[in-house]
Length: 235
Image (tube, rainbow, N blue to C red; front, top):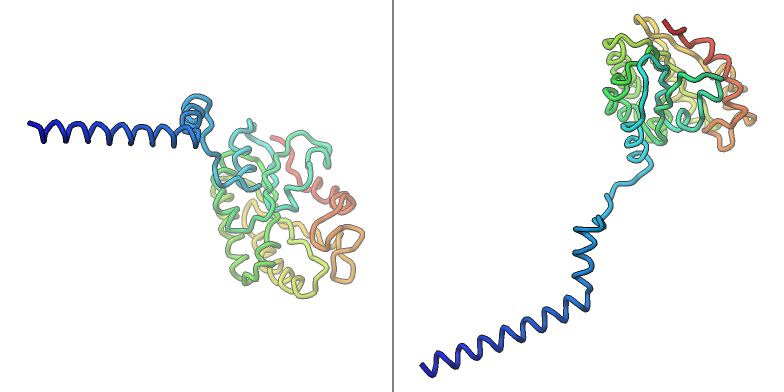
């Protein structure tokens, strides 16, 4: 019995010491406040992925778009401009995301089709070229994108990949453009060459760019009437 009592006393003492240590640690590291914030104040950790791409895609999911719009799809060359204001319209949706490649467009093609657009303008590929993807692979992705849109009954205007101020990149741009131009032989698909308006001696004119790749305001102004002329009238 004496041994049992001694063990009980020691066990109680150990539990008291452990409780004191835990209390000190909880107070030192402000654990109660953190738990309260997590459960009551919704102070849970924010998502790790908050890139401009994920933010823009999240916004797209919450926009209220009406069927029958014109949808501009592509990379930063599409995302950079307010198309409704540039073209003086009210029925254009901008679904451009900076940094995207052709495979990224394929990855969200269902979202684009889900908008039920009457027409899609497609401009993407310069990031693929910067990543040194083969021209044939880029063109194959274009073909898949166009196939998805055609099956959905959507008219597609392929905008030529815009040349840069770099000779080596332009050689690949020309190769891809030759390949994707052939896609306009399909039903509901047409091609619009922007480089005739934007280039001088085979290079993007310095008048129309600020970094040799992206268009300046003057650059977008230069293609305004070309794009407007290709917009399908509302049914």
